Structures are given as structure tokens and as C-alpha cells.
Amino acid sequence: MKDEYGLYDSGNKLKLEQLGEYRLIRSSPLSDYPVSKPKLWEDWDAKYTKNDRGSGEWSYRKKIPASFSIKYAGIHFLCKLTPFGHIGLFPEQKFNWDRIRDAKLSIPGSKAEWEVLNLFAYSGGSTMACLQAGMKVCHLDASKGMVEWARENAKLNQLDKKPVRWIVEDVTKFLKREINRGKKYNGFILDPPSFGRGSKGEVFKIEEDLGSLLDLLMILCDYKPKFIILTCHSQGYSSLSLEKMIATRIKNEGVFESSELWLDESHGGKYPAGSCCFFTDKNL
Ligand SMILES: C[S@@+](CC[C@H](N)C(=O)[O-])C[C@H]1O[C@@H](n2cnc3c(N)ncnc32)[C@H](O)[C@@H]1O
Image (cartoon, rainbow, N blue to C red; front, side, top):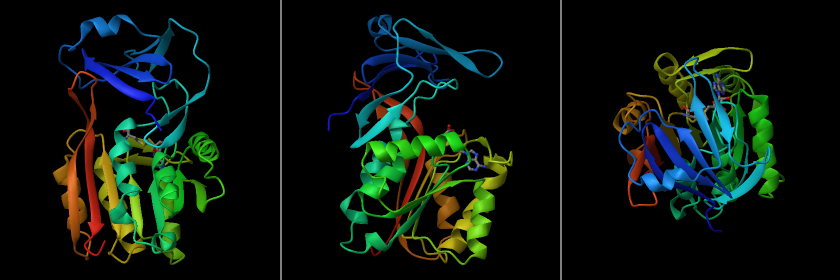
């Protein structure tokens, strides 16, 4: 399946991307350096600019449908240009989707027994990868609209008959409820935002809540997760700090592959896109 997403260039606090047939310019506050290929930036179809009220808007040179689909990293994605400047996928997660479907997590027969909890699950890229890999998934997001979007992606990928629970709820409330029910999970995937709101307005602040959220996850796997993928885009959360947050909580031995997330630019550059800690149990 040929990728229909690509990053051309970044700089001047912007990034230039191809999404299916459309060329987009979106804001990228940390790209505070000159662009590498100025000529490429002359051609664009839609541009998202932020205003000083913290939101932003799209301007168009070409009519773009309200929704359309693309193929990327072995997954079909429904894409929409949202009022927040999102497009419906975080392409830098490709590395993790490949790892989920990788041989290391494919112990024949056993994965079908695994239940994975995907938190802050957004449009479900990781949920699709887990279902493709034969795992059961509990997909949670506080936004009803995002869970609907992920369900549409499951249909688009013909994965809607696979074992997945779709949950619209605040992350902490749900975890506490699962602990009370005695529920256990084998793996966890989470991409927490710096700040988010639960389905009833509950506040999630990464610097106040990430540690206690990981404590709850430990109870849900008896402190012995088969794997954890923790990614973060908030300043100050390096891959090493994420690794320490996990290494000091788990009671099983395993392998940490922690690194920055990045996207390759078409001219050979690397675009930094967050931090990742990837843990797997030593017996995998
Ligand atoms: C995709 S993640 C964040 C991705 C990326 N790290 C970022 O900073 O933009 C955001 C998702 O978390 C969800 N979310 C935010 N707060 C939440 C909460 N308290 N409980 C459950 N989901 C939440 C949002 O609805 C959204 O889909």
C-alpha cells in the first residue's frame, strides 16, 4: 500500500505536507528555523494559520471535500481538515504502528488473548494496528466525535467486526472503574495531550496527572505489562523521562527502545515530532 501522506519541508514555524491529493501548510511552532526548499512552498491548496486567541482557520486555494480517505502505513484513514488544524492522523506514529505489527509482538497464538488499552485514542491509528496484529482492543477517548471517527476508520479498514470496545469517557474515571471490576490488560498505548478534558469536562494536565495515570495502569496489569507505548508532544517530556516514569513502576524485566519521534522530509531532513518510550517484556 503506497503512502499517501508525506512531509516535504518545515521551517518558519510551519510545515508543508501532502495529504492525498492535497498540499497543506500547517503551523508548527517549534520549527523556528528557515525552510530548506523555499520553491516548494509556492504550491499549496489549504493553509492553516493560528490567530492570537489560540485557535486558527483554514484558507483555501482549491476546493477540498469535507472528508476524504488516504492510505498510510498500511492503514486507511478518513481525513478532515478540522477547525483545530488537525487532519485525522498523527503520521509520526507510523513507527509504533509498525512495531505493533512487528514479529516481536507476534507470538503465534498468544496475541489473540491479549487485550490492549488504547488511551487518548483519537482517530484510532494504533487501534487499527492492534486489530491488524490480532489483538483485542479497548479504545478510549473523551470525545464522542473522535470515537465515531475511529469507528469509521475501523469500517474503512474492514476491521469493524474485530474485537474492539469503544469507550467515550474520561480516562481516569474509566481506569478507576476497571480497577474496581478487577479487569486486567496486557498492553497499553497512550499519547497524552498537555491539557485535555474528559467527557464531562474533567481536566487532564500532563504535569499533574500523568504519573498517577501510570500508577493506575500498573494495577491493571499487576505491574507486569507485556508492552507499553507512551508518546508525548509536551515540552520537557523527553524519551528518557518517559522511560524513567515506566521503568520505576514496572516489576518485570524488559527492553526499552526509547527515542525521539520524527518524520522524514522529502529533501532528506528530519522533522522532530515528539518523544516515545516503547517497552516490551523480556520474554517477547
Ligand atoms: C490525540 S491525543 C493528543 C495528541 C498529541 N499528543 C497532542 O498533544 O495533540 C488527544 C486526544 O485525547 C483526548 N482526551 C483529552 N483529554 C482526555 C481525557 N481526560 N480523557 C479521555 N480522553 C481525553 C482528546 O479527545 C483527543 O482525541
